[in-house]
Structure formats: C-alpha cells, structure tokens
Length: 399
Image 1 (tube, rainbow, N blue to C red):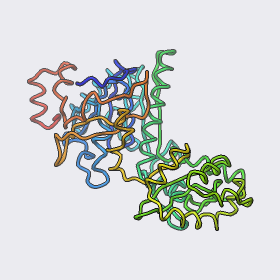
Image 2: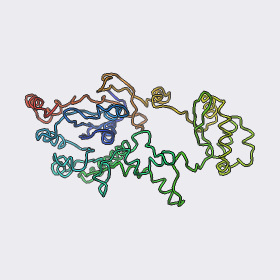
Image 3: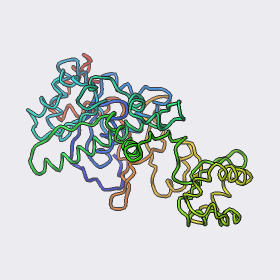
C-alpha cells in the first residue's frame, strides 16, 4: 500500500461490496477513497466487468481502486457462508444485483442485520420499490424513459449522455446515504438499509426541466434546440476547423466580449445593448459572429477571452485531459496500475474524486486488485487455516 497523501476520514471502516459494472463499484470507490477498507466479493472467475470491451473497457480500472478482492462462489453453500462471515465483520455492505438475488444466499439486509444490527446495507437498483422495481434497468434505459436522452439529442433524435451519468451519480447517492446512515448509527447504535436507483437518479436530474414546464406551461425543447436565455452561449468553428465555446451571459460580459475581440461596431448597436435584445437578435447575430470568428484561431480567441476574464472552453476529447496543465499541476490525476487485459501491469493516469479535504485530494492507496488477490488473507482473518483454503480452492469454492 502506498501513501496517498490526503486525509482518510473513513479509516477503520469496513465495507463489503457485492457489485459489478459501474453503479455499485462507484459507491465502494468513494468510500475507499475516503479511507475505508473495501472488500470486493467477486465470483470465482472474477467480475465479468474486468473483461468488457470497447466503451466498457475502462469500467473496472476506473471504479475499483482502493479495494481488496476475494473470489467466492456464492452458489455453493460454503462460499455463501464465507460471504456471510465477512458481512458479520462489516460496517457497510453494498450490492447492485436484481431484487431477490441477495436473499437467495442469506445476504439480504434482513438476514445480515439479524446477526449484525449495526450494519448499513446499501442497495443499488434500477428502480426504487414500486411498479417498475422488477424491470431490468441500464443507464441508457433510464435515460430514454426519464427524459435525459430527449433533452440531450436533437429534436426527434434522442441521444444518451456521453458518460455513465446515472450509474456514477447513483453510486454517489448510495455513498451519501451510507454516510448519513453512519452518522445516524453513531446516535442510535443501529444500522439501516439505504437504497439508490438509476431511474430516480435520472428523474432528479430532470427536475429543473420539469420545473421549467411547471413554470411556463411549455415542454422544454431538447438542449440543441432550446430557447437559450443568453445570446452568446454556443460552439463556434474557427480557423483550421477547430472549435471553441465562448460565452457572454450578462451585459458587462457582452461589452467585454466586444472589446476583447474587436467588435466595436456590435457593441455600439442599440439593438444589442441588453441580453434580452441580443437573444431576440440571435438569428442575425450568431451568423455574423460565426463569420468573424471563422478566420481566427482557437488559441487567439481563447487568449482574448481569458485576458478579459470571460468564460470560454476549447472543445476537447477525453484523451486530451491526460495533458491538461491544470490537472497535472493540481494533482487531479494519479497513477494506477492496470490489473487486467492486454495492458495488465502497465501504469496509467486515473481521475480522482473531485473534492479536497484539508486542501488535499483523496488519492490512490492501492491499485485495482487482481482477481482474488486477497482471498487467502481475508479467509485467514476469518479463521480459515491454509489447508481448508486449499481444499476450498481445489473444489472451486474460492479463488
């Protein structure tokens, strides 16, 4: 284990995690980043997330740092018994399987809390209890049914967001619930069950658009076709096909924008004096700005915007962030060793939890674990001797 440098407010807390994919692992990662001992229970063949291709290839190494791995076959009684013994030592148990799955192995909240009343049990589901709870959900499913894909895509062309937004935020909400339950346990001495769900997370994200409809009586248009409250708030294609997003969302910013880019004639137009006027003039204003900016480089526009203290953004790809000077200088990226795949053993940069505590980032203490890397040690701590572990391993109960 290496020293990650930052504070560890959850040090001494034990988390047992029965999770896969993104949502549940995010919850465990957050608790682990804050110092908890997080033990990931995997099937004997390893979490299938380790073997995903394409867009899923980054899931396991991203969301499973600061964890230990134990491989147990829950389908075999001895494997489920070992899992229950682990949970008897836990402060928090996290899972993200279909409703009823954990109960088959005596690993549901009712069973575990009967033995360990202080346990906090965090379930990550597709839907909170109700008419939809037995449906199988994915991030993309709830984006489609929860309005996010409608708001992201062009009219008539629903489009999922460009990251696993509900999975990640659902895991964050699970961790928030766990932290609240830990505070409550400090008062009452008792644990509780916490549930987080993809669909409800997505609906929470849609709350601002639902309120927009409640306030205006008009269905919000998808973001590419929305009625923008600001005139200068768009992507512009500039010299050599580069793109940049400049913004001017107030009258002082508009004047500074014109000064910075040499648009004195636009600044002087009475019809463009206020934001409301500029919004009404967007059909002629934006084409004029596109024509003027098309001959300037993105670096030139960015320099002018930055000097004037105006908001702007270059249009980047994810790979560009590895070289971001701000992230590199502020410690926003940390080394992590890949556990699986063709690049197993290689060290790459990973993104850290986006907060500071005592002015420091929460870092990587341990790399994402190899499959079953800690099985023997964890079983030994439960009282399993080497001969018994070897026997269980030979029979495929553990790995």
